[in-house]
Length: 207
Image 1: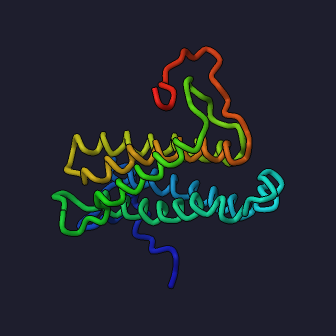
Image 2: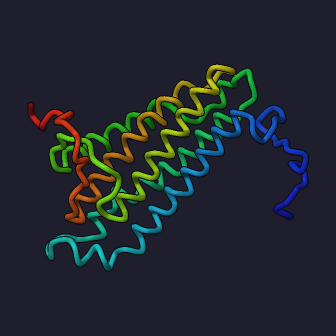
């Protein structure tokens, strides 16, 4: 099978149920999801390659593989779900609701991960900057690309019907990446970078 079809040589591409220009808002949206998924793959690869470094950072009585297994496995699941999101956005108008892949269950699981890692990370009172550890920095890159994808889906929704679940999923996913970045720093014993001019904008745990 040849990788090139020449079908897009005139600046158009196929979507499910039709063809559109390659700069169509729909293509911009699912193209950004593809970009995000590539960075998710980068984080997964980094987790798998940094085991020796991680073992030097965690306590001797901790199993580093188990310590990072939840983050690794959640990212693998998200990678599949981002592909599902792209598929749901790629349907030509009108939307075929029976064929949509992203359901409310995926959003609920994201919220469970967010809550778990928010509790594990240190209490947050001020805005933080992207970074700390390299792993957290890459997760913040994922967060910002996710926000861009979300904005593009909002723009698309002004023109055509889009899956409401995809929009909610992307909104929640950016929060996931924020929580994941903070728990990555916490597990590596690396402090978040506090924005120096931030007021106390978050409530302390239990307050």
